[in-house]
Length: 78
Image (cartoon, rainbow, N blue to C red; front, side, top):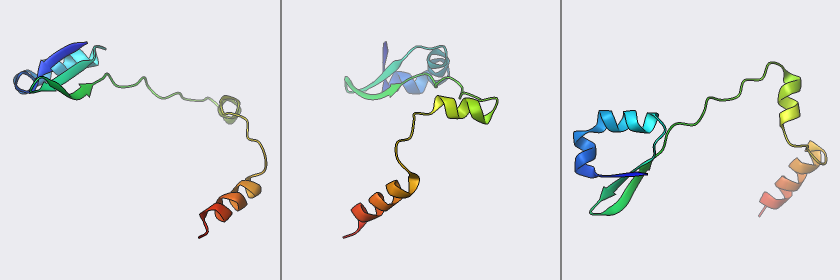
């Protein structure tokens, strides 16, 4: 993991962004202490070809939606 000062960040922002886009993490230091942590963007979102694939990827739901809504409403009342 690369560490760089705020001043160096201002002077080399474009190349710093290229470094992060290439997969390297960078910590920006202010007065020698971490002020920010730059990480590469996440991988692209998963695209499902159909609804069945989407449903298969979701965790199983236990109980009915009506019971869940009723429980949430009861907990929120004051």
